[in-house]
Length: 212
Image (cartoon, rainbow, N blue to C red; front, side):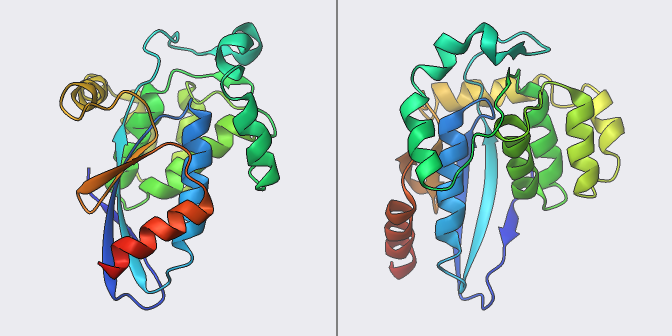
């Protein structure tokens, strides 16, 4: 997949970000929201983002499941996170499904060919945690792809392209990168950062990277 750029008003520095995340992960949703907000503090910087697939739960059925049917497993660890996110203005308005995210990762890899990976990632997270949608559903994903002008998205999503590659990439992340939880971020090819860092933490980290 091609990298994409988020352009500042006056490009002077490039910061490369490799981001491992999964769309059923509330920690990824909150962590990336803080990161995106922190990026706006550096309008002179061009952030080059590559999204890397990660599959947290390989046992989720292909069509996903209702959150209420497995609420104890998924909301127990996330309850404190959700409360803190609400204070920071990050909504969990309608989280209704635990989705199988394989198809969502396929869409993101396709979107990166058009330089729309980050836009699609944001839309998938919103669909999952704010709009109560099931992103296991290819129809939901095709609508997102059309919204961002991804030519041929319906044909791509109906194909088998990437169906084997996404799990392989996720396994490589475990076996070769030693990534066992997400979100995880690599800045400029090094310095892995983990978890739901706050806006203030991200602003400090980015400032250090830019100054270096």
